[in-house]
Amino acid sequence: MKTLKFFCIFSFIAFGVSCTNDFSKPNNLAGTTWKATDLSSSGLGNPETFDYQMLKFNTTTAVEGSQKYLKDAVETRTGNATYSISGNVITIAAATDGGGTMTGTIEGNKLNVLFETGNSIVFVKQ
Image 1 (tube, rainbow, N blue to C red):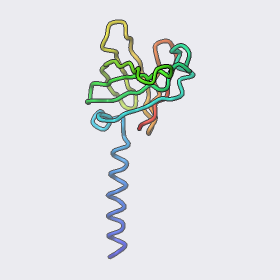
Image 2 (image 1 turned 60 degrees about the horizontal axis):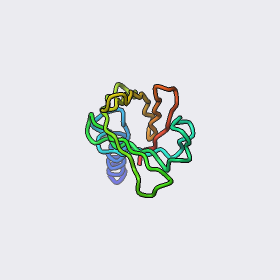
Image 3 (image 1 turned 90 degrees about the horizontal axis):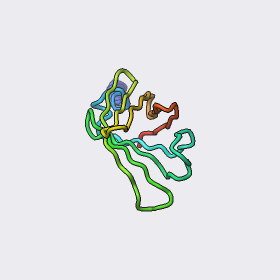
């Protein structure tokens, strides 16, 4: 009987963990925050200018991007975008004109975003 209880509890925990780590579903992605600290391949100018870039998925379609600069402990720039997911492929479109579109892939707790320029950033779930 103890073995059966242990199996049931283990199965419940394993199922719950596996469901919450499937970020290819908008419902699981909403409310999550992803951070990139290695910006060497981002093409965003001098990568040593930035402390980090962050994506916060506010809803099942809206994402907020921000970047913090090293030179100013206070300055953080933010921008809004929309996103869609098909399988593990995510498309992020900036809300401002000329902001561009990025695509990426979600693999576990990593989100690899590819810019239109061919440069990329890897975000890690926080």
